[in-house]
Length: 373
Image 1 (cartoon, rainbow, N blue to C red):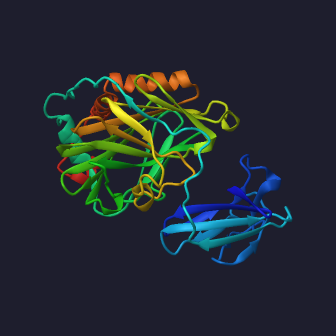
Image 2: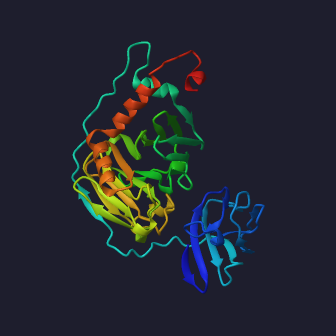
Image 3: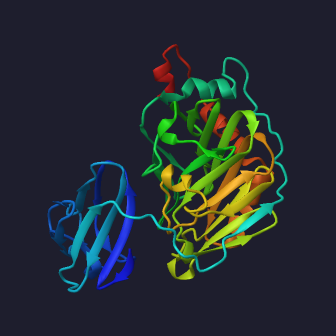
């Protein structure tokens, strides 16, 4: 929330049509500054009506908002009396670009192309890598939930066919990466209109008309995510990650072959990621956009005007682009991880490791559902 004067704090959020359970709190979850409406039971919020809150830390006593439709909602907290603040939730609001306190970064990163790596299969009767992945895929034309872990401390919980509340890559202290958008010749592919989503052992893929697909993968044993867009025909491909970083509570630095976001020092937590290094499998342009300069980031992706909005694009038409995001406690570690992913074709390494894990022991039957299980 932002202080807007007259004892008022305010936030405008884009919420999906769903049930939302929450409390109002300071950043540290202080007992005296964590508010709900009841000490013991959950309380439903009514739109356009003021609700008296109280300090109420605990479990099972959340505030509940049933959002009638996906869109913007404005939450206003009036704190003339800290013991009884008033909360009002209204449908609508303005998603306004924050005034940045630093220049927005725009640069060309002359990264080397990742080497081509062919996946290595095993002897018959074990299926070849792509055949095995296709046989295990769970495909749905409508939204469904999924989850991946990184086997370090992170977990990605997501929902297909959406941008709003589509997923969060959670670490020990919160999250930085949500979902992402795929650009093809400057046009953002709308996940809500994807023809199907396929859940593979290595990641989640959305398919679109015209032979276009995008895939999110979380690497095992590393705090690294791979975001990939593919097209049957060569095109100018790009990636727009949803990053939970306020533009004025983070900094950005350019390296020879990657870009690094750093969380403001006062927000960093011990042993938790504070740096995000971004690399790619080929030379790329990196530019921080605003909702004004790139309206589809608002109209299609519903990104927040308060947060950074990086757009990563290949410098030349291609049929595939992979962008890596590495999360680390130190800047040096984040850069090292991101560079290793691009230099070693981290996406192919991830596919190979997943295949090797699945076929270390192998049982295959005539029942496809049994095999997937």
